[in-house]
Image 1 (cartoon, one colour):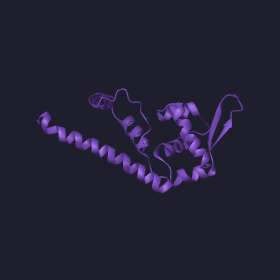
Image 2 (cartoon, rainbow, N blue to C red):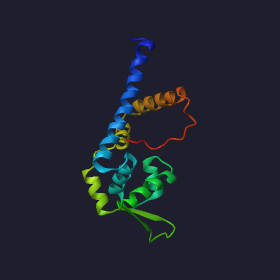
Image 3 (cartoon, rainbow, N blue to C red):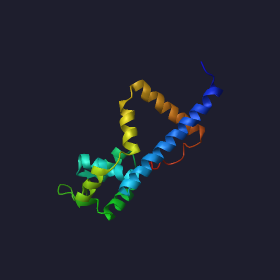
Image 4 (cartoon, helix red, strand yellow):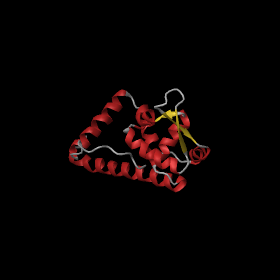
Length: 154
């Protein structure tokens, strides 16, 4: 069995791999679609479940609604989504993909967020708890508990 000092380089290398992988997903998405990872993720979620409310999209993206509104503003400027007042509840806004949005999603590469969510969901309960606890330790080690999470760029 290896000792902790022998395993530290492996942990650091794995963190580097994670950052590199997210960066590669991001570059591929931007190169092929001219969209960021979060923008593309929003489009992919809307393709699967349109129409959708902002609050539901935010929940599925694990982001604050205000953050998602910024993403949606940029997608609307590119004419990839539309926002329409709900006919059932005039206070609510329904989100739809435009034909251009559907075309972008059809040719888009996978995004890091989708790969992560699907991979985490596929873990056993024990594996998931292990990953979750390990990530909490890394956050604590870096003193990052007070940092507000931002969307992954990948």
